[in-house]
Image (cartoon, rainbow, N blue to C red; front, top):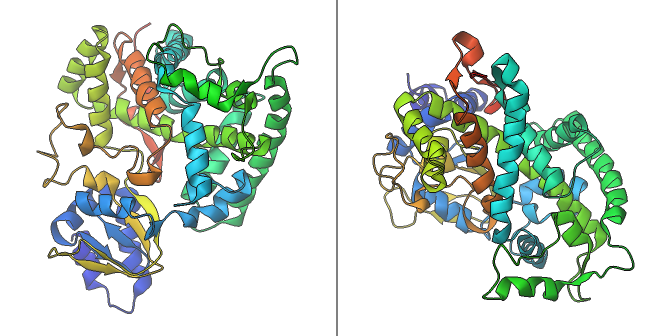
Length: 439
């Protein structure tokens, strides 16, 4: 029986069993569940949440932040970061802090960031070469962004194990603790306290000496508006924490030391687990398509990053970072108004906007079940959509394909036989994936 057949066969009053059927699909077979919903009930109201599966409807939800907000994240994010822009919509706080952080993550950094990611990935692969195997999730896909957190963001942490723990405990609470387990939340808050103490000390080290000059915020920004600005004459300090610690903000731009430290924490929380998941799943998807793998490898060997990156992001479409994004309905709203599927979403509803499903909507995405690198960029929602599109989109946009490229370039890269060669998951989060390659 299909998910909807099983759901419909359960008596109306048995809400728990109805929700259990849909939960099974959401967490273990999202592509199968959403395919069925796209074809039969594209806006599906259940007793616990609303599932939205078609491309235009998903975009509508994610672009109407006054109706579909992110405030449900605040109880878990604010105890860690303080008032967090990631859990706020249409506010001065959100607008101001997002703008500042974008200014210290300029596009001019991307060639250097990509080079860093490639060198770190090579070192990890060289270290494991004697065994002719590497555990992708922990030893490559998490290792690279953890190192970048130190080398580029300027937040190296006391040691690798502590950084892994800080990243995981906070992510587990903010994005995976759907039952609101207090122990998971306590672990996240404990990690935040440890991070804040560490970063407070590090902040003083990042400050320039008295003989050196801090930079006025507007002076710093001005270099990016000069026509002659190039990679060669680009002079921003080496890491992001140093930039922030030495910027002088005018009185009417409230961005304190505490807010700088909060955003350094956001860099760690937002960049490790998600980046690792996407790298792991991209490698798995490519290795399981031998013909596509060979074409991607040819692009990698030719150092044709423009073409190679298309293979990576198309591979990720088949198993994205998250199949859905969660929003809270602030007021009654008519979704897909004027269409046969027009549906009123009630105030207080939890909405799962199926970004993974949207990327397979045949009305928008041509031949969605085929692997194609010729798709227009707007077909993809890897980084979300609307005002809460991932702020690190351009950084991840070079880090993910570069790490995948380095592993594909290893001679004899292959899937291992049996269970060892399969990605192990907890929910939809990969926990282990071992691949083999020659020395």
